[in-house]
Length: 562
Image 1 (cartoon, helix red, strand yellow):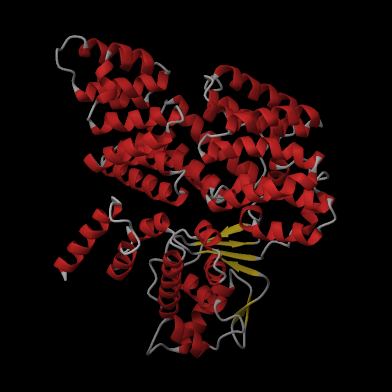
Image 2 (cartoon, helix red, strand yellow; image 1 turned 120 degrees about the vertical axis):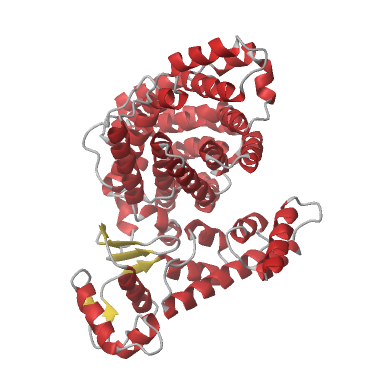
């Protein structure tokens, strides 16, 4: 049997039976058979039965088996163990499964780090000729982009994954569910969901998503029923139950059943105590939403603390929801200035939301009318150039050449405007001709509103690299890390881009070191060739810190190559 094909075809029961038959016939278990037996069992929810039959499986040193054991630890809420197993598995065998599992385990540490591991998993799948695994990576990337508030990118990944799935005839039910779920969330938050995505609702995660979609369509009673059904189906593990309770609270608020919501929210808060932060935060959120409506004066301080945690991680939908409720609490206390400040701090999480997305997260628009009126008008032009190259004009994505994106960087960094000669020097460099710059601006003007004499952008513009610099200069490292996705236009060699990229990199490293932000500094160090930064970071690490070995190894390799 082609076990990989059986996995993609959704033939999990048949695949598990085939593996077990052969495992029982041999005195020494084949690691590959054990790996697929465990993956099939996971799909079927039968991993405990497999462990009873093969107790040594839990101690396997096979990297891909370890990766699957990491996934089980994750599902059981044993997140530190999950991360340790995933790291060990990838170090032993860099492949799709180990990279994908490491992304799953690393998401709580850093969503951006998780994204990098998912892209590595996608690369491994494509290199190995495994399109079904490429679909799996695309589905996870789509959901991650939703978490980061990049709803258009989430929709792109989901649509691409669905297209590949159709082209190869992928039948894997939970994987198709994930793609439709990601597409649905992107539609809810960034656009408008008009119909329910096709889901196999026998899977708990799909039923949970269907509840969200029903809530977005204004069917709060049906959503509440779906959430309650999932709550009954899942094992009583706190880490799995807390997000469900938070959703039930939100549905009850939509139905105006405030007292019931508060009782359920208190249950979630109690259950969330002493769990990992991300799950405890679900419990705190479930409690504070109804509590802020009943007792805003006592709710504002814990809501503000919770918002800070969601902005640090980051979690765009939860940050937006918390900010809306906190702003409403401030307004009810007559503190409009604090409400405005709250919305400004969470602007990155709020501005990508459609009106329907805001209503889904917080409640009917009429209920939050005063809060929404405080939000500044959305920028006409939005530039996301840190680690990516996305341009938005009035809420619609715009396809531009690299040269045009470089021109935009020059104009944003010089808001008073540039002459053709100044623009040419900044974008093309020494020896450039103004006529070339004029010709490119004429082409760019067909897509964007530009003003001449001097060249400048019209209307309100937001650029992630400008906001990043502002936050770093203010010492707002948490806000900067929430925004930073990578270097400015990494493929550009335009003088102005190189200068701005290096300035941002130096400023970020200086801020990380000055605030002793060891883990994010280490993650950045692993991405860049900067021996001075490595040495500076080594000086801050404890002598017993295992990360020293990696940094010292990279330094030795660098100086040997030199």
